[in-house]
View 1 (cartoon, rainbow, N blue to C red):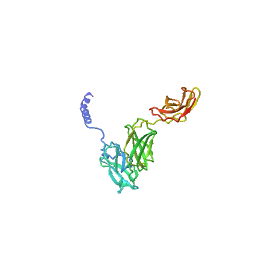
View 2 (cartoon, rainbow, N blue to C red; view 1 turned 30 degrees about the vertical axis):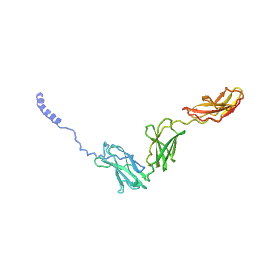
View 3 (cartoon, helix red, strand yellow; view 1 turned 90 degrees about the horizontal axis):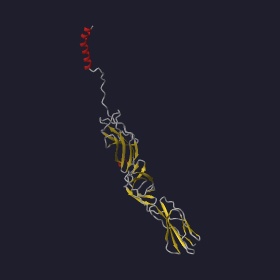
View 4 (cartoon, rainbow, N blue to C red; view 1 turned 135 degrees about the vertical axis):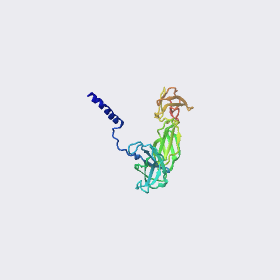
Length: 323
C-alpha cells in the first residue's frame, strides 16, 4: 500500500498545479458604459430685476445612475410664452454660464419679453452628450423695468433714522446692514420714506432701497448710504411745575420725565425779578424743597431735564411763590 501511494503522488501534484494556474471563478457579462445623464434640477427660480430676467438654481452633482458628476458639456435655459412647452419649437434657448455642479446663476435681457407671460426652465447636457430632464418650471409676467430708487438720504432724528428717496414705486423694499455686515431686508413700504426706529446711537448703518411690483419683479438696488446716529436730542421740557410757600420753605413739584436715557433735573431760581441762578443739579426725583428763603421776597422757579449724554432741555414754565 505504501508503494502504491508513492506512485500516485506525482499525479496529485500535477492536478493541483493545474488548478492553481487557472482561475476557477465565473466571469460575468461586461457592463454597459455609464450614460452620465445629469440629475434633473429641482430648485430653479426666475425673477425680473431692472433690465434683466435673472435665474438661479443648483446643478446636481450626481447622475441618474447614482454616479458622481464632475462636469457637464453645457447648461441650457429655455424661455417660451405660456402656455407653450419649454421643448416646443417656439421656445427660445440660451446658454447658461458654468459647467460645474453647484449653485449657478445668470441673466438674460428682459426687453425681449416685455408684456408677455413666459415659462422658463433649465437642463444640463452631460459629458457623453445626454441631456437631463427639464427642471421645475418658473412662470413670470415680464413688465417694463422698474426705475432704480435715487437720492436716498438718511437723517438723524430723535425717533431713529429717517429715510427718504425718489422713485416710481409702486412699493419699496428697505435693506439695512450694521457696520460691515451684509445687508438684509428691514421693511417694506408703499411710500418713498421710512422711519427706522430700531437704531442704536454710535452704530454705523448702511441702507439701500429697491422698488418692487410683485414678489418676483423688482428694480435694481439703489446706491448705498451710511449714517452713524448720535444722541443730540434733549429730553422733553418738564411740565406742571408748582411752587407752594410756607414760612420755612418753598416746596416745588412737577411731572416726571419718561425718557429711557433720562439722568436728572436742574432747578433755577430768581429773586425779586433778578437773573435766574441754578440752585440744584441733576435731581433724580421731580421735587425740590427750597429752604434758603426770606419772608416777603418774591421767588420764581424753572426746571430743566438732562439726559445721559448731557443734552439739556429748555426750561419749564415758571412758578412763583412769596413766603
